[in-house]
Image (cartoon, rainbow, N blue to C red; front, top):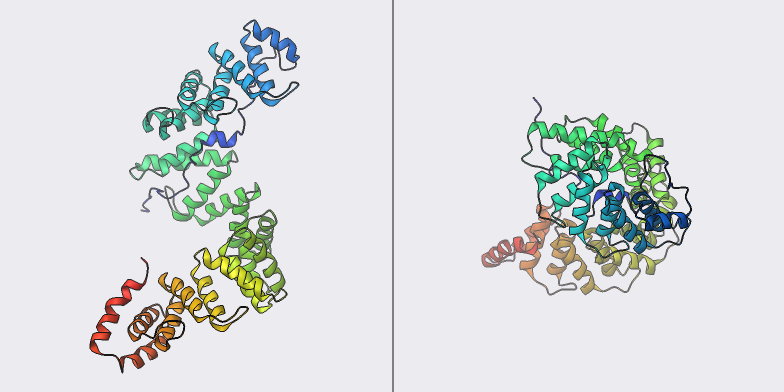
Length: 444
């Protein structure tokens, strides 16, 4: 029997309430009947009716003011009229006012008041307020945290078909390490409901669940189905992941390349850097240095360290792009400064060899050390050699032996020969110090 595991590492609801992320502005209330006053009424007519305490007119006037529809936009006045209508019990107005209070939109942020207005609308069955109230209670925003009560309101909103509530409820169950098998099944069911309504976040959560076998039976086919659904809705990371998946198992290389390019053109750094790698490597896609350089450059400008390093190396070598040693070193330096070990090693090599820059063994040793401390075996071997020969650093057999030992443990087999050579001239005390020193050189 396959054991279902709680998904403790799935996507979690964002700190900002999901409903608010979905609604940059409060939803335009949609009254059920076209009575007088109506949405077609003139602003001045609505204003007169609103002053007479006509709740529906107050709601419609507030919406016009909020959106700047037929009247100058004035969020503060919109909040005033939403409040007047909310005080008369209209749940649409109570919800809109609560959202404005959450966001500080036209009013001062007041989450405690937001909770109160959501509560009043939620108790009248207003689904969006039930959703927001649930999230506020779970997060303890504007009120004492109460996960049980929060999930109760989320469930009510989810049952009314609010996809964001279905997503939040599904994730709440999925991320509970103590969730019962029944609640794990509920997690998958609620996420499925949200995903079927087109909510990309839910679709991507299902991708992970089916890929890992969390809360559901593991299914690569279902994982791919939901990944494609998210990709077809325009999610660029999903498009990039789908492209890589199709290329990775060679089921449809042409479609995989197209999905990657679709995402890359829209600015997905994930797609751009992977296109650069694939065009450079020439295994899954035909080698194309010009395309590789183009996509690495696009990703490098977005701050992707891997792309910055690759672009730097291509500029140093003139591979697929006009040779420019100065620019190459600049890009390598950016990648190295971001902490990428291989970029630090490559920059060290540039300084050691004087490739595109004046040779500087001391700076080379500096960058090799940063990479070696992160566990990069090739940098550890290089640093061992520099300490053995005193190039750019003080000659030190103990340090050389320690770095060579780490490099050998990391798979650098040639380091064994250098260790043997050092041991012929090192004392027992030096060897003991090297053995004691080696584990302390790498950052844990």
